[in-house]
Length: 295
Image 1 (cartoon, rainbow, N blue to C red):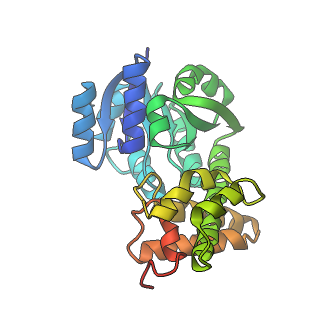
Image 2 (cartoon, helix red, strand yellow):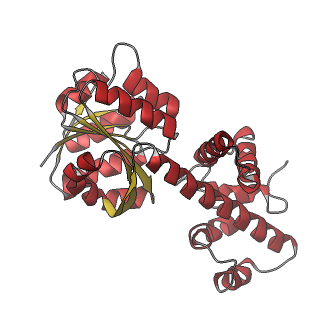
């Protein structure tokens, strides 16, 4: 069993840590988070060290998972002046699981190579309950040999592994996954919002959607929440805006137009600007159902 550490122990990171120690027998030796309350809580639960510095995390483990919010946070933990995860990191493996730009994954990979540390992308689909159960869908980017070395622990977190190619490719694939998911969510919100305005029963239209070309995975996961205005956060509107923006940036770099993604991003940006960014992505229905949101 491996000595494992986590940087970023929000709902996803903490549940991955729980699964690997409590269900799989790995030792979670260290955790770190800018939210010290969160890191202290999971450290106490698992008997791990709540590290004050990033270098302590690397020192305490063989495999370090990171689950951070954005490119800026990723750059800070790996490339920050003074204290960072690459201090004395020769022989260590970093598996980076956040949805970030391909560019930052490549930067970290190159920096790791320079100090003889291995770096993999482990882009995640699914959500909090799947993290706890070890049934995530993981998209891996990086060197095939490093992937094969750590396939066992990755399998323990995943119901299905996909090696997408060299570093950066998993981030590209995840951007596509979230782009289409967000588009589907926005489309469903508009369809249900229009149905509501027409006085059509939401349950009736959802049943019809499910048996026609309007069916989608988000119909299963989000329609009831949109109907009931239950937007407890599993995947925030703020993150949806970020991830649609990653796809937008990739497309712009290739000179490709994605007008539907652009419109979807604009809707999620509107949620953020109007103080709704912490709602679940299903909260986009607050912009489409008649009479719900003041603007």
